[in-house]
Image (tube, rainbow, N blue to C red; front, top):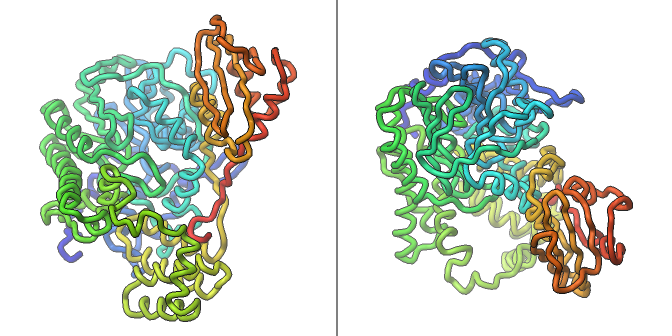
Length: 607
């Protein structure tokens, strides 16, 4: 800690550079008056770091909390501090190109209004999604309201739509629930509560929207001109997102790094859950960026944090980020092949001192510990090879046996408190967690565990670890909360392909209740000229498609002839009475009755 250069104010100078004005007050509300963003709540960060926060994380939070419109270079502007991510605006011949319209339509509209307040009422003439995560597309309707998108090019990397929607649908309920913990949804914005998430402050809670792309970037070297502005692309799939891209504005000498290089160590596997990312390919694409764009920019900016000015400074930044992910990947593999498990490697691995001394390599959002375990998971999966872990009891049954071995609930609680008093909150948390899972009614154990989690959270340099620990304490004492952010709203559902729409139903079929069902339903979509055959058998809903005019080898029990909007309405619960059909309509009733609704407030730290 003492080796960190707290006297280096370069990041603060860069974070403040080009400031034009802030949204005052820094609060964004929905149409119903509900607050969906409040950056003013972080005013307490102006004070010195208290003993309830890690000084390095406090410093990062102060940087991320800066809010307003900033000029990056000629004709390039950013709005920062109005959501977890940045909105970048590039002025063209007729209007402005928007890059990454934040999470919510409300915050995106406020960001665009702030830009127009200082730069004039320029129309949106292009929209660019850098990658497939929700904080980079969710506010699309805030900059292109319904009815205004006609003729506006919307650019995204190849595979964007599939990954953007599938992440928010297939495992969306569990991810959204865990994201509440990751961003500290129920924590007060205070020195002893939520002080940010490392990558930004938190997530807005407005309306998530999505306008499908009209231009797909399929290769490195592809060039597109939008509103007279030339853009050169580097495709970087499998890095921070499955579909992602960097790009250069050659005439403006400005380089967009999406979320591939930000001012922190990023996640190889985010705590909310995701597909494990490839640290090896991430490092290689950063190296490719150094070479591919060499000499053609004077500033680099990203979808989070503040820009880096100076060509040589950008090269140094990219090289250090490249080496960070390469070292993390390669050293995990080296020790993995020596027979160490993920937790063992995570406990011993440290970064080279030259990287540790750089602020942007610190684990404010990702962490060295959970990233090492993610690399291990990518290559070897959940099983560490020790057969004692192959068929363990589930958490509650295991906990009951641990507590029995410890001599009962009171004895285990006393021993856990002793570990906490001795300065070992990590094992105190493990032991107390067993006591709580063995007896969820043990209030004393919950209170003790909440205290240990608060200790661990306040000492964490990583923003998401802090939020997880402090949120766990809240849930232990107050019970599960409700999810405010809805990633499965009608606009997101409408963006699904029909195949993905059917998949989203298949993963919600109550398998045991459907064991004895055997039915076939055909959906003939006139506007797609396709027939989708849905088969429910052995508790599994499968499907395939073929041209609508083809005659199936066997007849379906029910055939519905409809349009895609009618299908969306049907799945949303509308009356199917007006839809043409052949066969037994009761089959549709049977099928839909087997579709479950996931619990949006399931407990995370209690059984």
